[in-house]
Length: 96
Image (cartoon, rainbow, N blue to C red; front, side, top):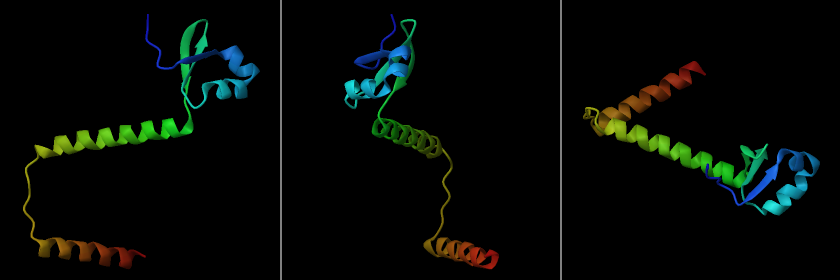
């Protein structure tokens, strides 16, 4: 049997009949939504969803950073960096 990642389960019929009651029973925890006794969806609080999205983005950034660690490095002096920034800034002003 498949693992469910919620302590509370509700059927689609229960959710349709009284969504506020399902939310109240969940008390801020995820709810697995069942259809014909099979998991069809998870309902999670907004804060939980946003935190999950942030963690996914952090993970993606970590993977990108790890990939770039193997890239060949380029040496740049601070003066070259400042000049490049000033040039970009000047180009932005010209376009505006």
